[in-house]
Length: 182
Image 1 (cartoon, helix red, strand yellow):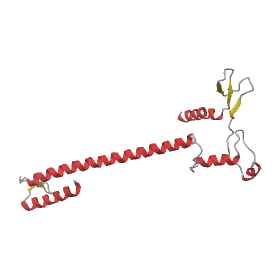
Image 2 (image 1 turned 30 degrees about the vertical axis):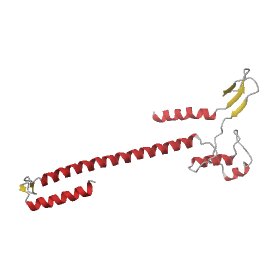
Image 3 (image 1 turned 180 degrees about the vertical axis):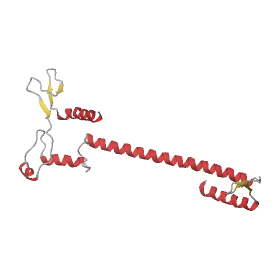
């Protein structure tokens, strides 16, 4: 179903690109545009139906050196246009095509999304660091308060922390705070 929808959408989008466009002035002097020429002969053809450009074989290139298609585009110009879509830089004096604008838009959107993701990651890291520092400061206050502290050993038994163990734990916690919490 999705494939059929995509095919129909691509056909609808390409139809205006292949249409012929005419310009003329009516009796009141207004400029009109249409895909069908008026009955009067004063219509100017702005854009003809585009012929699909296919890569030519080397022997065809020599025979088509001076030829142009319905839009007045030489085979060399068609190749140059195809090269632009391959990622090469366009001539800055010419206006950008819709495809070039689309590529730039997608690049800007990807860069913005990447910057937002990076900022979110940095924010989460800063929040985690702040939480960790707050816990370490609370533990340091408890160690310096002089209250009795106990821990559980590897057997799951409760052991009291002596003064030497308290001093070692205070030093370790203070070093962590000094290194992490600035």
